[in-house]
Length: 248
Image (cartoon, rainbow, N blue to C red; front, side):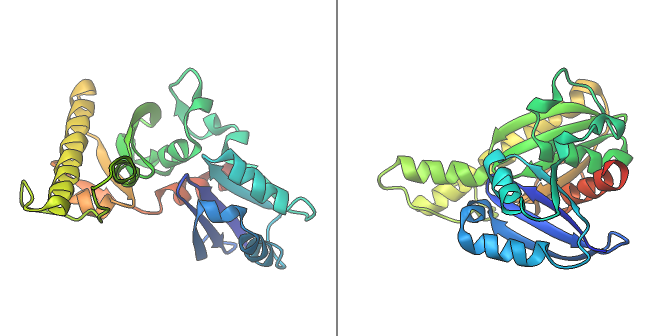
């Protein structure tokens, strides 16, 4: 029996295939925009409609239209596509919010993925840069800051002369040309933003959190964060596996 679990993000989508013991067999990583293409439909149907696929497929999604598109692709099959918020997640983790439906599915699933750490701060470098707080095993909410990649793209698209560039780790505080100046500005700017928010979160509750980094820029910023961190690029999928085992 093969189980399918996926995460639809604003920028990218990950679809993972697991065996009967929930050991990952393989995964597909694609740009979310490609979900609307015919080629994706063919690829998805080829993989989803194979024999021995469990009929229940679990996704977390922050792009309702993309989730609906995949669901529509599978409407004539015996497969049921479930979005994680359709389930009673409060059976797995206490959520200390008035309306947790306003929180992105990926953020809640990340919290479930690290719940066993009891006190944890998950920093996700996605389309937005998010900080999610798990205190005493409860999800307490978090912080949403501008995403790095989209901020770089927006600056480029809003100016006539500034070039595009790939963010790199730097030692210099300032640049000798435009690209260097942009790189140092974004690198040290986000270094300040990240460390400042982490410091405020730690001091607000006087709790020592374990910090888990995930997302595209996790490795780039790992060593400049002033507190000890670990990188786990599968934390969302791990959370989804927990949900699947307990609620699906």
